[in-house]
Length: 301
Image (cartoon, rainbow, N blue to C red):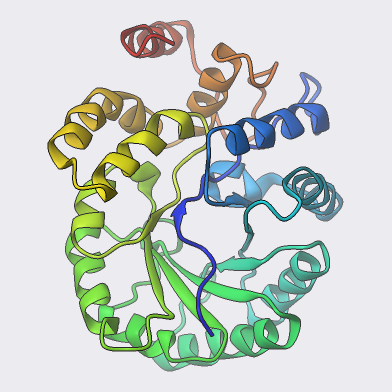
């Protein structure tokens, strides 16, 4: 089973109205912006989506709205963050029935699993994926979960039916991307290595074998041409443009306020109307907005 997820696949923010309700028209505009920017896929229910703060009904509405706008243009990835095999499979069933093409699955993290348990866990999700025509992306994010996965373990997971990709977010990401990409290079090419961490090290990850990145969603039109230059061999040009974008990328990695940064930029760019976030995410204060304004002005935004 080969992967369908690769290239630039932004994690969609979840727009809210000032009262905290889901802003579905804003979400549709956000998806349209991604498609107009030439993305290779979109993802929902990731960390940048405030997926941890969404109800089951909202997840269903979001996935339905995203699928309706996307149609068959690009794959839709849905995050799964259940804390047991049973709850992860429940979320996977909801995602598959809602039209997700791939499941980005965090390991269970309330009780830390050992390597054998992770193989069993992802094996069960993989079996489900095969049965439903979806696929599983392993999300290697120890900063969030506290669950470490060695390159050797990820290689073992890559052999499971239905498991077709990994999103490496374990710093330092670049050597780990290289280790995993090198180890699976002799296989049938069906396993993809992607990066996260808001694309902070995307060019170096690409140099070491990654074939995709999953950043936040406020700058796909700026990052897309950089990746195109890199893939076309114009590496110096790509690095020069990436250096200009990097302050915004790093600004969106700040713990606690990252979600507010994403939404402030989207409002500034006229894509959504409100910067509302949900507890425990934090809003930007006036000083933070002024600093972000400096970064956006330097980018001509």
